[in-house]
Amino acid sequence: MILKYRTFELKLKHPFKITRGVRTSNWVVLIEIEHDGIVGYGEASPSPRYGESVETVQNFLKSVDLSKFDDPFQIEDILSYVDSIQPGNTSAKAGVDIALHDLVGKMLNAPLYKIFGLNKEKTPITSFTIGIDEPEVIERKVKEAEEYPILKVKLGLENDEEIIKTIRKVTDKKIRVDANEGWRAKEVALEKIKWLQDQGVEFVEQPMPANDLDSVAWVRDKVDIPIIADENCVRLWDVPNLGKAYDGINIKLMKCTGIREAMKMINTARAMNMKVMLGCMIESSVGITAGAQISPLVDYADLDGNLLITNDPFEGVKVENGKLILSDEPGLGVKKLV
Ligand code: MG
Image (cartoon, rainbow, N blue to C red):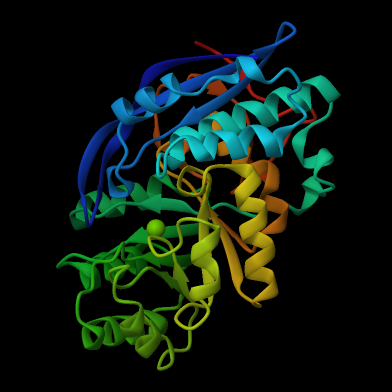
């Protein structure tokens, strides 16, 4: 097997602001794994929150030697080797995992959801993300998101109430809130979440810093809506410890090293009677479609990273009135455009 990669700058439709900062574009690494003339596509979208950059992804991929494997179906062996090269580097590892799964699907001439035994009619509705902004911009973004029935709203800075009130002025559609670790004191988090549940918010994601699990547990016991772990839930080994503070987990392929580990995390969360959400970074249709292939297994989807960009280098999963629509093309079912 031969591994190749190139960097690519995804341009955002609007500047995207969350508690950690604002960005107008996002660099990703597009990956190809070739075997016997068949090419599998993958993608790494590195996040500085988890210590990665385009440079760290490239450095990691340089150290991956797939020439010693001649059977792409030995996914467990291949990905165990990739994971053992260095700790961290989760999006780089996810890029290899996604490309390998695409390759195997193409070799079997079947879409991944079928290989996993899933029903594509059961894909969830994806939320559409509204970043932190001034009221006029929020209002415009909510109007632009008209076709999406669920909004995921970023909070966690000074203007939380103003943002929710602005949105509620324009629409009564379902709102999910992501505070991205923004509320530092548990009393503040509790007050905010109590107010948000009165506004009809469905759940709140990562209200407090990931290193303060005890405070999240304190808050969770006093509120009525589910609290979902994102920054607290990186890899499989994080899941068993989260039941005491959270009602569900947000799995992202870029955090957890890909489809292989995501499946294990879903099973672990189900054994703990926890809700499961599939999220994403700013990604092209490669990463998003990989998530969509396993989305029939989850309760909530936030797979909109490709909807926020203007220059998607691939075509993949479609969205109709918010619902993820998978094709019957083999593997991921993505088509390379550039
Ligand atoms: Mg989040």
